[in-house]
Image (spheres, chains in turn blue, orange):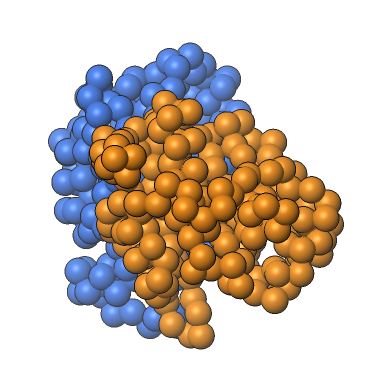
Length: 172
Length: 184
């Protein structure tokens, strides 16, 4: 993470389309606040927030993961500037983190949360292989509408099968 | 739907005398209280002091209540209710000690908590979670009007096999309809 990245991340956090999967946080994030937030997340064991940068050095967003029980399960999320949507960058960043979690960490399941107000988010997750498993009806308010919250997950064997990879570390 | 056909349960603060009892029950079956204790690993035994500390930590969270459930002067269980994440969709959990089950207490407590959620809090939806293998708990929730919301896979491991968690929810209009029906 570079010092100048935090201003961009503050902008992402202050934008209701990119800030969070369900909560509407007040748009008062500053670079300093983001730095502190990222520091705290990166100080926690088995969790990280990482900047997403293209090969030419353009910052496009951030991706985070947090293991619940180490090497058992992880929850992850992504925030990207709208100007970079639709170019496959988010998918590529998520694939890298999924590879780290399943292949390097050996987790059994990866989880994510989204909500029905942004259908593109669920579609993007399904493209990676996530399955919608729990739907909490009318659970949150987005853009002035009451929408459902959606929990999705991907099992280890689903990750490996979908990508035609061999799994040498299967777990219990 | 009941309307307090059992003796009306009361929700009380968890006092020191209750904590001793909670610790005893936890030592007998750590898993049953692991969610409440946010205890990892779930099978891990806790001292009385640790339980007291965990309860105190939970009580510090805003819009959160951790309470003892009494029927008369008998300590019959404990529970948790929190709108810390979102007042619109709180989260609640409770347990009735095994020897006090099948007496209507669970239904009475569920009604009480649903009243708290929708009649004394601006909630619109409340969810509950039970182990995927606990058919009795799932049947209980359905009987209270909850609808299945889905299943979170591989939430824990028991005797070498992955276990899932089943989620349920109920919306305020659904609850009010049931409540109105019970009053007539």
